[in-house]
Image 1 (spheres, helix red, strand yellow):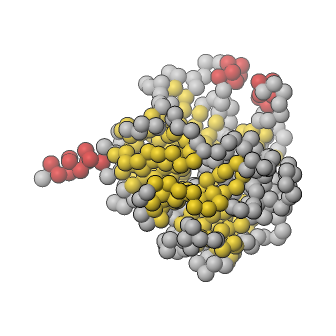
Image 2 (cartoon, helix red, strand yellow):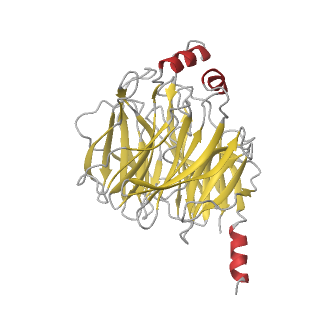
Image 3 (tube, rainbow, N blue to C red):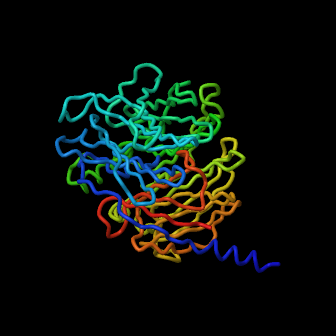
Length: 441
């Protein structure tokens, strides 16, 4: 009979918003790194029937840059409660959170080693393991290749293989070094190494291309990384004009090259060469690396957002007549190559729709289907990504307070595939950070 199939399909296109509620507020730390800053990882995890968030709290008695601390918030049946916070450490960045299949939580911390109110300096990366969210953690210190001079600017990433109970930590040093360390199921750091960054030999001034905000996945010691270029504008004419636009403030970074790299076995087999998946170099555009999902065959599915031109003033001076558009993109990677590439949404000047896509995340359900939850045109929408990469119809998610930027309880950080989509982020009209639960069936 066709009717049960049609009924199931209709239900799948009607997501239900079950919960929308605030979690916490905190003053602006004014240190360049807000609670969503580590967006390549996630600060929310599902542990059975509970949800846990790693919050970033501003410390009133400390000055930037080292003026925030982690705090753990738990949602059980009676709503959100702050269960504990760092009593001694100070740092700059929020702390990504993961979970093992046995319920243990992992939190990456990067406390400074400097005296109070020292602007910048050395830091000591740590992995905190919580047997329970309200229990004191076991503090682990990763093993590194050599003696890297870590600071408060870690640009770190975390990936967790929940079933295998292993985790991968990335940490940057400066503009040209990425260090990694693997935590095994016995609680030891079994392997470590370095990942060289790409090199911009074609730039006016050749230089390394720093890779930041890594989106990472780990399965059976096969590791995948999707990163974005984060360097000072390499084109002199554009750099000088941006300097004028910023009133002479020498702050300008290029986020317009999307790179992917993988290894089939950490510590035993080499990393593949960096694969340039997409770039917006030609028109001084912008790219945000959003998500990465591994299917059952081990193929990597990528999600990112492209903006044609970074700023209308740049367009009017250098690219007259070029429409400013945003494209939500997906691609599949197999054997180190892009095997398909699809545009899920396209909007802006000269497009069929003027609505533009913003933040987005993958969400896999237990039946093997893959979805994209996105901010589009001031609301949240959901669409299925079919096996061939094309998107189903976008359906509005009826949120009272749509989220513009958000993290999810994701498989990349150990949370299992679920019919429930757990969201942590900034909600329209709600101060601070919020939580939402959406049922996708």
